[in-house]
Length: 49
Image 1: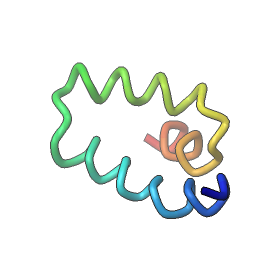
Image 2: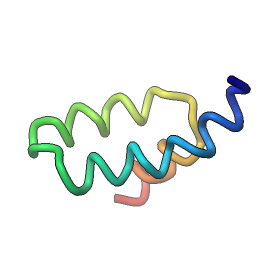
Image 3: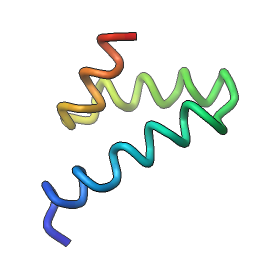
């Protein structure tokens, strides 16, 4: 797949999963991974939280 398209489609799904189904420990892990990801939308979501 084309990475920008993949990130555009999957980032909202990942964020929804983290919000709706992840445990608190998983949310903390996800926040750290998002901060290091290099994906702008994920990094902005962590900074805004």
